[in-house]
Image: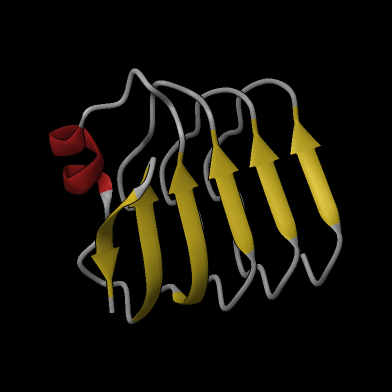
Length: 99
């Protein structure tokens, strides 16, 4: 995705936001593995209670917001990839990963 806004009313599968440069991706449901993989900018908002593994893998900029009230801190932190090079991941109003 190069620019614009996409709203997914249901769940999204693997690689949602893959190589996203800028823009906004809103996911109302759950997401699969590798959310924001190789993302270099933009914003991803997730409202689902389930998230996959490898979030922000090789991410080089941008922000991911996990807004679900049903998602706990430990699950969210364990889902974020160690391979993130730059960017921020938030759980509601707290930063849980940044580089």
